[in-house]
Length: 372
Image 1: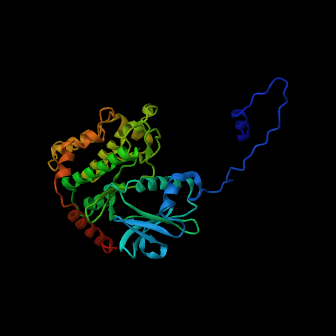
Image 2: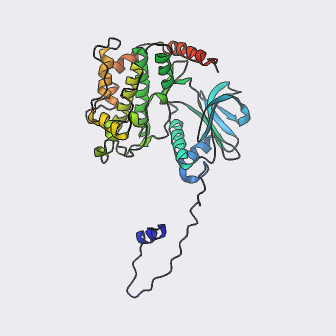
Image 3: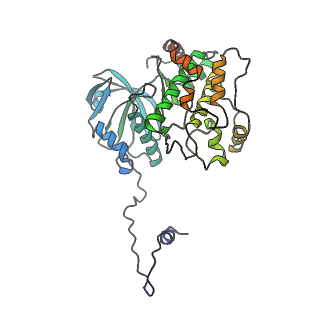
């Protein structure tokens, strides 16, 4: 059915007996004729207004360690490219006055609407999470005259996916349980913060979205597909990385009832299994049906009971995270009280020393300086 007929059918107006059909004049002036949305459009008013409260046009404001700095692009020295995507680039830069090194996400004004929504959702979360030590910090932003937006963020040294793969495949080693414990504590506290303070669910917990630095900090990132919880329930089913999705998120029979933070608990369990063994716990799937069969119908992954590298507490925590029935799988509050979490919340571990040792070797094999 043509689009115009759909509109007429949907908005059919009843006429009085004998009344002649009037000619209708449709006003399509509000349609953008295929023009790409830009970061200046009002479709994301909340995030844009928050951004503009930090910095208008070419002048911005940085908030670093409770100290405020006015800045422009000229106040930042570019140290090189970190990454790039459809949205633009991420560069490592140093703010000359404070001597703070940061990651600057340079977003093109013409980024498409889907990417724009994810970028702004990510930004909205980090801007409201600066009091959480387990989430990457937002420093400030500025709008360039041509409409591009520069987002200044805390820079971390490496993502967990690169970190663990280097340990297992190049160093021919394993990740100690005490490091896994600290990763579990930090990630769980970040997820709990999102739920309790912001009423959102991350929906994309995986090694590449957990970052480390040489100071021993462990932080969650990438909130672009986070979802708002309504009565503690999320509905959208296509957000996230499918291999880490909980059974209730890929089972079509469960599609009507939605899901809650316990789906992220499953993703955390899969992540910790991957980090503890050096490989993703499922074989590669050739189709969505294969994944559905194995994850929904098969047994959950588990560590071998005789694996002496890990404590019973860690095995119990993994088992608890990977309970297939989400009604029996605990939420964050109960997990934070698990003996494994309580132990590594209190125990002092030299995370910084371990991370520095791995990163130094990683950069050496890449032929790079560990400070680059």
